[in-house]
Image 1 (spheres, one colour):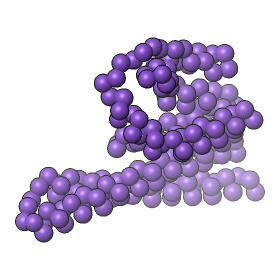
Image 2 (tube, rainbow, N blue to C red; image 1 turned 45 degrees about the horizontal axis):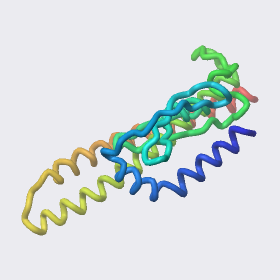
Image 3 (spheres, rainbow, N blue to C red; image 1 turned 90 degrees about the horizontal axis):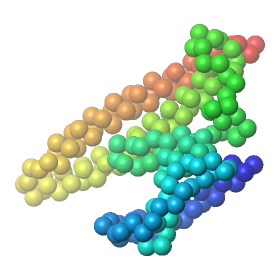
Image 4 (cartoon, helix red, strand yellow; image 1 turned 180 degrees about the vertical axis):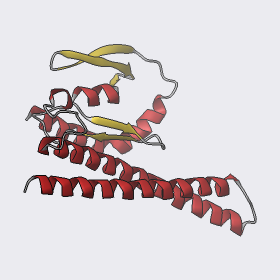
Length: 189
C-alpha cells in the first residue's frame, strides 16, 4: 500500500511540477552546490541528494531502483519510469523461474508482462520520434520555401528512417505478445 501511495505521490509531483521545474532547472546551471545529503528509503541508503539554492534534488535512478521501478532514458533524453504492477512481488522477490524453456503459466505471465513493458517503451519512443519528425519536416518545408538546404533535411531523413525501424520493432513486439497470449490461453485449457 505504501508503494502505491508513494507512486501516486511521485506521479502527482512530477506532473504538477514539470513546467515549473524546467524553468528552475535551467536557472540552476552553473549554480553552486550548497551541500549533499544522504537519502534513505525504508531505512536503507539509496543515494545522495544535492542541495542547490536551498532545495534538494534527488537522483531519479536511485529513487526508481529503490521502489523497484524500471527506468529507461530515451534517445531524446527523456526519462521513462514504469512502476511495478504487482506491489507485493518486486523484481528482487520474484518467485517466477527464469528458465526460458519452462512453459509454465507463471513464466508465460512474466514474459507477457515484460513484453507489455517493451511495447510501452517502444510506443513512447515512436511518439518521441514522430514529434521530432514533424518538427524537422516543418523546418525542412520552411527551408525549401526560402531556397535553403540545411542540416534539417539530413536530420529529417535520419529520424524518419529511425521512426520506420522503431515502428517495425513495435509491430514485431506486438506480434510476439499475441503469440505469448495465445500460448497462455492454450496452456490454461
